[in-house]
View 1 (spheres, rainbow, N blue to C red):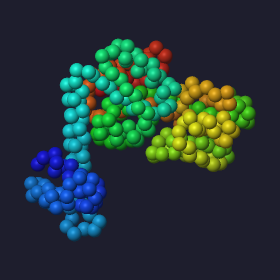
View 2: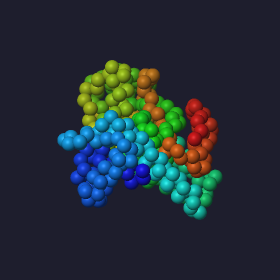
View 3: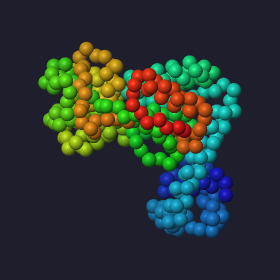
View 4: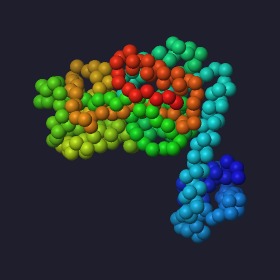
Length: 303
């Protein structure tokens, strides 16, 4: 059994159609069918129910699919790690959600680059769900995101839990208060971001409200953080954002802390599950050194 057998089977299982799977793999359909037949012969088990429309996997096929995906992810991890170790010019590609850029991320990257100038660091803004796919495809080496999700090929380290705050126009009735509760936002128009891809920080905010049994008056989805802040400044609604966003100064936006126990957003450090590259360990150490200097509480982990 070879990796190509796994790739072909996963494509067929995910597309639920041999024709679409062949197009995805850029091969003709008859060779693909022969490869799946050969795989079943090698395993001496039926993986796909014969004649099923749409295509359905047998119980053995469902089991094989889960482990085939894991093996393919591990193979991609091994390729990416070996390529990084074998290159004289070391590189570290970092994905990040926009809100982390207003927090400690710039200091972390600067600290890392000062200590390891031989490593070229590049940063790419992308949503947490995009980071997961980019990690699996080897397009980034680490992601700084906010959304918790389950994927056996990705390891997530919770760096810290960041308090959420409400962003309001300065003339808003709630701006007179020093602190707010989520229940104060009932009947308010809430601006959430990003509109896509989902799930995203927008869903995290809505889940926090739901956990507190708070229903806003209206919810408007916008494309990105900067647009949400612009609309707040224009008096078009309020937004719930991580407290680090307060570094985005705007004369027509004020921030008020939310005192609810639910109102926190995690900052997650995500890497490929098998990746133990020295650069990642050094980057994580830079995170903790910055947190120590700023007095930010965290529970340290190692790769």
